[in-house]
Length: 169
Image (cartoon, rainbow, N blue to C red; front, side, top):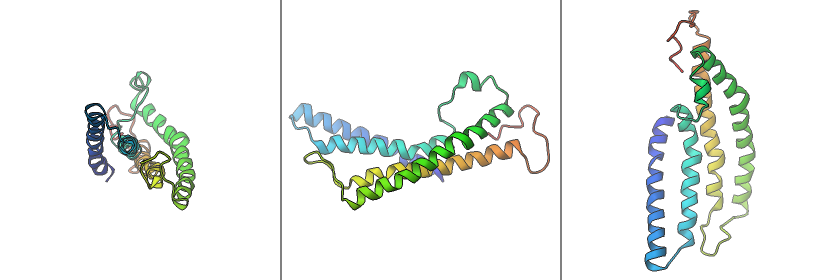
């Protein structure tokens, strides 16, 4: 599910590119810069970034310290992944989600709009990308945690210390 969502979301970068080109042409060719184009650029960027976090983790394309990671055995990599998810990623995701909801609700209740003249309305909508992005990241983290757990603690009782048996990461 997250991979299909991420694949569909990847089109947002093309939309961002089009908006940037239109804004640059309008500003430099016609001398007409528009604040709406400026704001939609960072709205698209924020949406792509926040909603792409879960996809990035699910696809295992997130940043690692590969210099250390590649020198470790597969079992040690799995243990580091397990503890990293449990002790670092999931608590951060929960905090960002819990504190992000009131952030969005307050913006919605006060009908917050851009403070720039001619700026975009519905500021709560872009703020909603924060908890939504972290919700998707949480789903991806739990999926990843389940996969790592099965690698480290197989249910059929087999021992997975042999090289190549932890390829399920």
